[in-house]
Length: 261
Image 1: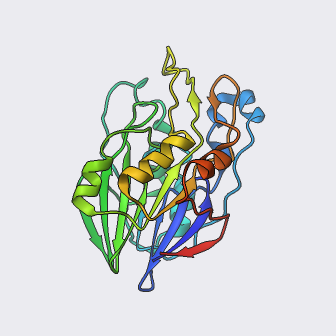
Image 2 (image 1 turned 30 degrees about the vertical axis):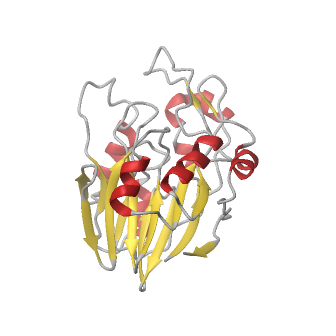
């Protein structure tokens, strides 16, 4: 399998001439746009457009930095579906963080297929399994295991640290690569107050530990070096250095670069 970085949490994965795309991002500036003038203080991450023709898209969750309808429309082959976590429902306030992506995905006419944790889907040469994750804002989130040609890649979205690592390893074995978020952001969202003092995304050392517990061969850092908004979204500033100091599994993949596992 070949993994290509699209920036932030977005990746393309290719096997046997077919391709899937996970969490691509076309317009990073749209993520905090609902905050109005305050959003101008936030520097978005660098991203690149996905390659057209993917046989399936996957979303780890419906926060706007992971669920961009334009990016998916660009990436997907005609008629290709998008796999996403099942929703929780609830009041308007409960749904506030996913409403923007929900509206844009619906307006784009994308075929969406909700998936429960542990549910697998076969598309082309790929077996795609939704796995448990924990969202820092309490919204639905899954991780995605991508299997093809005897290789396994695990994309962790922007999960918090949790303890399904052992169960995942017991069921599927060690991944050849795990793409793990490392920016350790503290979240103070207006609809989730009082705020938690704990990071809403794995810190670098937590990502290193997750890779160790999964017995992953490689740890590819994602979800760092972008987005910082004082008092709302506050990541650590030295994420890559810290994760590299915490694990000898780290493989940095730059924007637009491709690695083979």
